[in-house]
Image 1 (cartoon, helix red, strand yellow):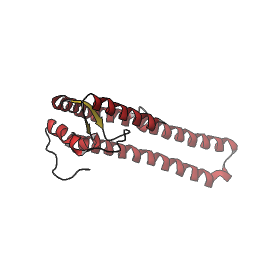
Image 2 (cartoon, rainbow, N blue to C red; image 1 turned 30 degrees about the horizontal axis):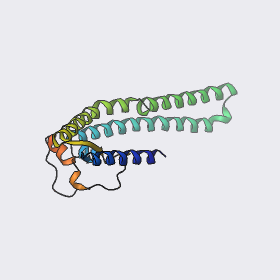
Image 3 (cartoon, helix red, strand yellow; image 1 turned 90 degrees about the horizontal axis):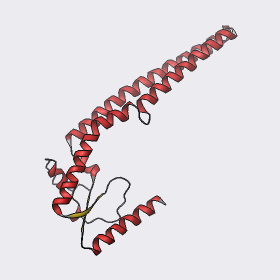
Image 4 (tube, one colour; image 1 turned 90 degrees about the vertical axis):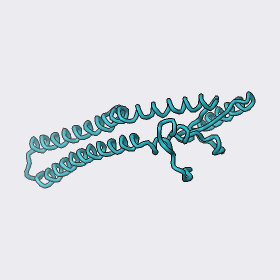
Length: 178
């Protein structure tokens, strides 16, 4: 239902712009970002941070697994109080591991904040360049080909991704990119 609504809005905006003679262009922000060294560096930093945190989480769960295996081996020899204490320790470690994972990878966790700190300024720079290219070229509408907006057909002559890259100071590759 949402996709139909998006397509309807795209076609409506295209129809209105065509009837008033306004120019429509599009960019592919995924393509643009992939060509920016600072974006790729930010992604590499995020991958490294994420990998380190994932490794720490895996170690925490390995410790929990070993604690539970040790408990199972010794269970016959333990009193009810000792069993309850050991199970409580295991549960406490699980809760700690889950909390650590949530703090690192949760909705507004550390990875989200790192991504925001590293990537958001680059995205803002790209969107500013898109806006400048659109204004300088007289485009009334610029759409993003990447993401949720689906374009059934796009004429390559209206693709302004390379113009945005040039505006950002990068020379696009000569090879076919799509």
